[in-house]
Image 1 (cartoon, rainbow over the protein chains, first blue to last red):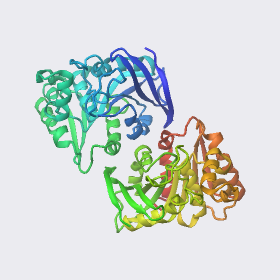
Image 2 (cartoon, each protein chain N blue to C red):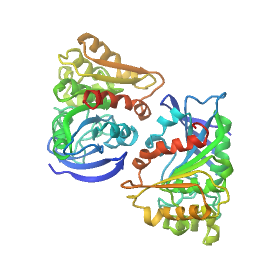
Image 3 (cartoon, each protein chain N blue to C red):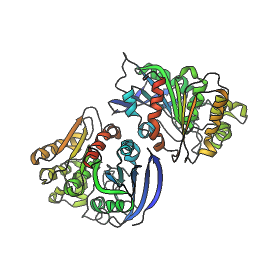
Image 4 (spheres, rainbow over the protein chains, first blue to last red):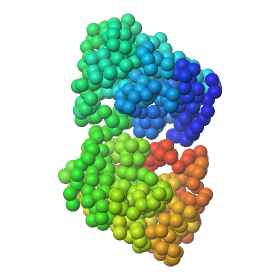
Length: 281
Length: 281
């Protein structure tokens, strides 16, 4: 597990760094970014918020646009942002923005030509945290968050792997992908046409049957152009009511799907995770 | 003076908007961005911070990466970000990143082929504020700030037009362009080879002879790869000592030339301008 540092910027007293590594899970070279606050040391390992980005994004969007470092530096929280799919010339791809590279949907594909590399579920759950915890002064206290496709990733992974995370959050998640065009297209390609194989990647279906709750905060803009056709947060709300899942869903008038929305409320998410990670009371 | 709105995002309760307009000064269509906080109304016009960006940038870099909206929303300050040069297929350009489109250097060019469109000095000083003050609920209280080439623009324009601004600030400005490669290349092209025509676009030379001081804050990272060859903040410091100009120059160990540096200290700049704009005591 060798890491190659490819960039380094001082940020709010801490450090933003990008690394390349050969992923055994994905069978390709991957890039990720990490923000390390000044508090992080071998003597005082800090907890990590993993951020999963949306369609077309890389490790850079959140780090450049969300404005999260200010408060993460103050709270003493590391942030790790992986890429959104396997990458490379020999990795299967599609001309559309919502399939293939940049659109991994945080699952393990079972269908050709995707199954060879598209194993983002295992990468996010296993390989990436093992790598981070082996190389950086961080603890095994983890939170998981994301936006849109990454909100789908954070919720589905978090509900299924509840023992691995302290808290979950999402902005504008694809909440019920088995019933929306983005999800149906991706799941058909990656998982095959049989919908019974889609259920374990649908946050609303998982939340409805969850036996173990995890504190979860979801923010949704009401002027989000994808709200009705693709995101369906009301399905998440109904699922949480059904199972008693500890979901807080907030709707915000006027806000859209962009990073301007994320930046406006990221402070609430960091404070929410800080409480559950044990950083604040 | 017609404005065409081309994007709109709610941000920290206020609005980030992009507009297109036909610039009579530049003879081309220009784009700018404005952040309007909730406080802005016809009854309560708010002051404006004009932000001038660096080489290769557009109106978008600062608005997406600096994280300024949070505090601007709290303080009740508008922010306006113009593009960094005239634009368009019939506007002279150069293959290099540091000349032509994206590299206007905030001056009025006198040399062919640049003189026809490259009049960013007049655009920033006259046309843009007139446009903003005619179309938005803002006051005529203005502050001026920028980064790198835009720091050069903010300092040179601000010192020469001191009556129009309440305060100035810059990150990593090109402080003494007559003596650095970026400045010498651009000034030779835009203003001709005679250095006597360059003096009024050099912040250090202007500050040395300034009769009217304007509160000025400059931040410089000490791990900035352009520090020694291009930026030369020590020349600015010497000039301020010579004329008694009210310059505060701060050096920051470890920080580079990126927006990660700007984001880390933008709060100090907004609070500095807010005091001089009369928003805070």
